[in-house]
Image (tube, rainbow, N blue to C red; front, side, top):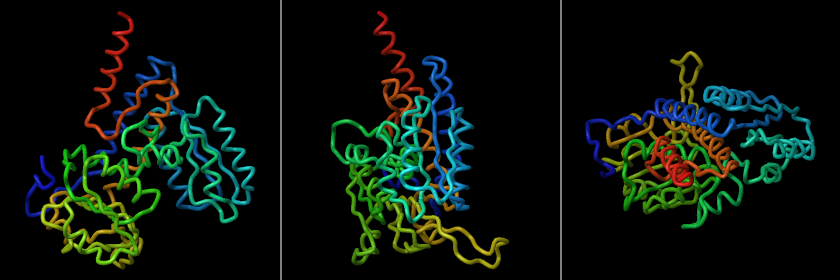
Length: 329
């Protein structure tokens, strides 16, 4: 398989919405098996501070997805006047709750609260976002222990690449953006998949030059249609992480959503491309569910479901079943 194996007048759309639905179905089946064999239900706790509409919407989507796959949910809603100490105490209570396997503190937090300090209070065993220094460190190291959880958006990008059977070995990849949430872990994941990776950012000179030579482009810079379509190499794979609103008087809401890539022209040159919306976005929540499930397995000292592998949930279940048979012989 090669990156540009799909060649047509327009790129094949990578349907993140459909893939996320498939993954939720896989996780639901895995949760039922975990409950049947080990009498445990994965638990996800969400902590929402204040009344920001966007944060409340994100939490609602996450709760809905958790309910769909059969998770146990714990919701903590706090006023935006909560003190940093009281918030950390709430996190510590969740850390001590044996029915909770993953803790999510919805960001951003009010200005008077130190986000880093709050996130650091989440034990690595329950770090469902994969941002704990130990998880990030293990992600970056070659060999050694795998992270207990992987940052959700980069993990979703990898799932999309792998499920489309896009080969990354020896390919030139460019990640645009160096945030701790997307760009940095995405670059390390691609390196672990044997791609040769460049990271571009606001201080990079001539980003266009890097993109023009890339077999794989991951755009996560947060600027609407920053990457122009004519920058894209013929046959390249484009993963657009951005989600930006631009004014559009023809729309009922007065705006439309676009990515960081100029989609209309890029799709004429790429072999695969993710749309916005409906590409990477739905995968982020699907990976949150996968992380929660993996943390529940870790609690039971069971093998985690790998990301950088083509193995399916059924393959892992079969491997676990074979291991159990060996022990009983």
